[in-house]
Image (tube, rainbow, N blue to C red; front, side, top):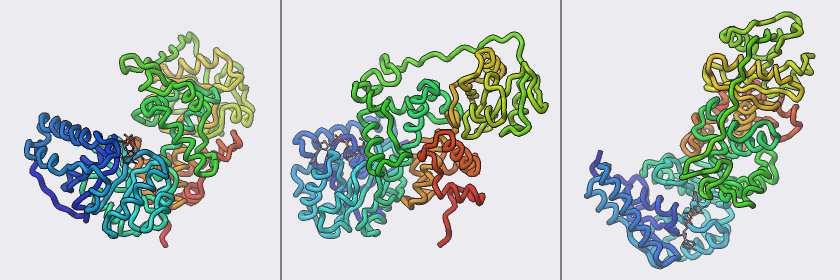
Length: 515
Ligand SMILES: NC(=O)c1ccc[n+]([C@@H]2O[C@H](COP(=O)([O-])OP(=O)(O)OC[C@H]3O[C@@H](n4cnc5c(N)ncnc54)[C@H](O)[C@@H]3O)[C@@H](O)[C@H]2O)c1
């Protein structure tokens, strides 16, 4: 419904300059004009500003046709846009937001010029996603008036913006940007100047762990996507997301964050995406990524059929089994013939539900016959998920795999059968995600509240990683990580002190120590 134009400036930015009128500059200009500021647009390409103004006008016009704006609003908003052919035309701005090419020296040169043109108390802000705010500011005479102001694409729809304090930024500048963001209807989150800030840092877990799972031969990418959508509730699987973002954007981000953190194993990228990038298999935009696209629609490989099994073997569950009560209840609900004796009968299928361990390790520790042993992932309660995931080990007999598949699919719930993996698929990805989020808090990059807000709004996850860790139990996530580290011997999975301490004491992952 169209509404009256109310302009109530709660920030000092009456006139805002935008440098760079590409995808991001246009979006930022749109929300600034809608919130009541006069917006001056500058671009190094002579035609670019005129095109940006025309495109914004067309966009507002479309909203008016849908009844979401009045003709008067369109006129007012368009009247707030001006082309600024030279940087000197921005001299009267209270704030200049830069959204140009992602190159340190080019950004520094633009800000050095702006600094000589604008009032000393004007604010300069960069929309950089991967450069250091402090490094850009190092070329300036007044680094205290400079901050990061990182929006997401498409700006009007992605309602979160990261306000990033460089090492020498005056906190007042961040407060002013915070007030401006709120006036535009965005949620500001505050981050220290560190690689990836909040959203691109917290987002490292999802894709990189999924790539590790596929590179280990645990499962194919389409199965990993199905599992994470159905068990956790992600809107897009990691490979669908990589196809959407395109590898020419996402692979360099993975490499950049990894190297900026001095080869931190938690962020290690994958040769899979490096090779695909080299081959030009980028994703949706090239018609082929992990999926092949016809008329914009992905061709999704079909799932394996549920085997038909005439006579089900009995199922044995150890008295020491992890998640025993839940496993027994599920088997009972499925009508399985359950054995709970000291050892399995010769024909029994042995089902285990490890947390972080692989099926092989549990079979060896419990002295089970690996040929008859299968694992099921019960990290999330069975009733809360739309898919069950079973894992074999290298010795599992085909008839046992098929019997387990048929049994766990017998009530119609989809089942994926994967190869052995410390932490199946979901445990690995979720534990890694909670761990990286925890370490962001440990490093004091942002508050737990801002982290949760940034991740839900910026990445669209079904809930914040800390809330997910709390729901699963920080002690369970901790155990998963310890066991994954044992299986893989990889420091990638070492728990962050934030998670280790809260998990050990029984505190929420959002708990902040009092001073
Ligand atoms: N596209 C995204 O999803 C996204 C998201 C967040 C942040 N960012 C960041 O925003 C910035 C811009 O990204 P984009 O996707 O809008 O790029 P874009 O290529 O769509 O637009 C960049 C614009 O800047 C202009 N430009 C280049 N050098 C200039 C200069 N020296 N002076 C004036 N104008 C100049 C170009 O002519 C172009 O119009 C980058 O720093 C990028 O990292 C992009």
